[in-house]
Image (cartoon, rainbow, N blue to C red; front, top):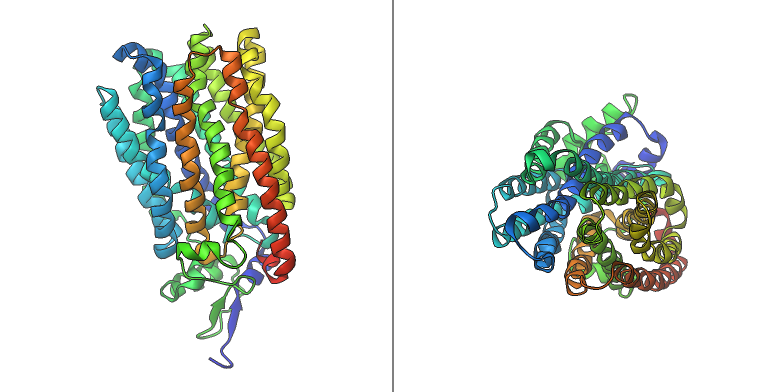
Length: 449
């Protein structure tokens, strides 16, 4: 309507900066990221106990270790669509309730088949967390902090995985492997209930949906009491070109090659990451590393991931895909060294696994956010969901390929496991080149990055 007042949402966020609203948003999304990471990693730390209690061979664990990733393959796309259609907050609450219930039930599994099906269903919910955490933080932040805040939140996923390692090292011997799933089942349901009342919605999502006007006006008033929304003003995201939340739109506006190549980046990193996550406790046990040390090595991988995500966030905010390509190159020699470190000393093993996590999980936190930022608000959770979903094919392949080669010497096995990171470096540099060319051809899109 001619002459209708407008509220430019990105300009408002730039003027507001980072304040109490963002701290509350980060608090709740960090909790959800922590338990998401915990539930992803819990089954790997339960695996050595399952081998002994159920009298199964290590190679039989391949399907179980990949089961939740089959669920994520579909869940990330389903909940990405839910997030774009019904809100990031609603998608996060539903996802946490779903994987909480089925993780809790998994504690009562009596065989691999039962456990695998329950992990698959839990994976549907697990897959919905990261796309919506990325979207809700990036869409509520000022321009110079969009990637940083989202990386801080998603960077807590590895720390959640480390918590599973600490629970394993401290309580599995006395309480059984079931304790891992009791904790992983109760916590997300508690967080979901709290989020119903206290988790804010994405500001830009509300800006695009007229039905959210009342909540949007109240939130802007809470953030800036002196700000007055003109009567019947139209909320606009002035630095983005929106498109319907249709998967076909992920290939338009210069994204025809970039979108599938980002899927390949995710597949490469997740293949290597889930091999490390799923098999390190078991392989260290086979190399006669004490179970508690093997669990701590797995936890060190995750702690390193969170430290890497936090320390590298500013660089990733500035350099995006170029930074990720460099990190892939660095990952190759570090991951290759894990097997040798495990046979060397406890200190060497813990140091190398920490730095492997620093780089590999730093990459994952980076691509979770940088990949999503190439899409506008109307497509962001959907685009991120497809990246994580298709990328999960690599996560599925990692544990399964590990099961095929688990008989190799541990030193050679870890050297082979570095290959996906070498491939990731090449693909990421190609994406960096394509994205740079796209932004030069469409300079108006650069403001939204």
